[in-house]
Amino acid sequence: MFTGIVEEIGIVRQARLGTLVVEGAMALADLKLGDSIAVDGVCLTVVERTERTFTANVQPETLRRSTLDSLKPGGRVNLERALPVDGRFGGHIVQGHVDGTGRIAELRPDGDGLIARFEAPRALMHYVVRKGFIAVNGISLTVVDAEDAWFSVALIKYTREHVALLDGGVGAAVNLEVDVLAKYVERLLAERDGGLTIEKLRDAGFA
View 1: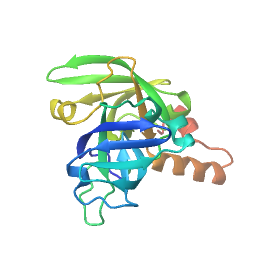
View 2: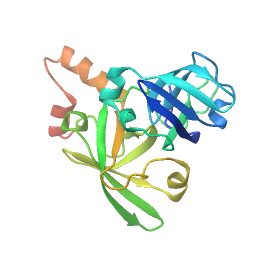
View 3: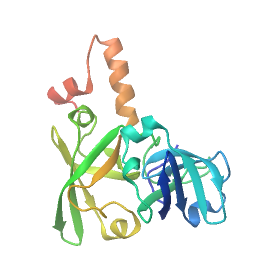
């Protein structure tokens, strides 16, 4: 499990044939073979490591659901090690199981901050609510506004300087993971109440 608090920006050294090699420093400090690490929000297992890099295998299903197939040597990625039992829970529950991809639709200055608007699949948007959580490229963010096919977040200067998110500019693809609690609530309500869903609750003004 992760929290969406990026520890450092890693550099892709190799990305081909289902193998990803990433260089880092802080995230490699106590990284062992078999450990989980989130790369742009995707939970991967470390299969090899050197003093400066780690290697992970990427399965076809992961490539289909995420942006990892577009990574190239020299590209920047967000890294976060799995949360230790005694660690601080600074973000929200992030599994590293990407639900799908979206794209950066707009970047708008807002004082010292920046409002970023992302287009997202409608199938995911009914799990996204104003002031709720969403992970974008593994970054825990609070939703400012949300409609049927998009949501927006506010990015303070510190966040922009310490994560890899806006490198590709408007139009760039991003990994999205919605709040897992919303998915469990929907499933339980659907089984108990004959088809009650988060979307129906929203329509009724309860979500």
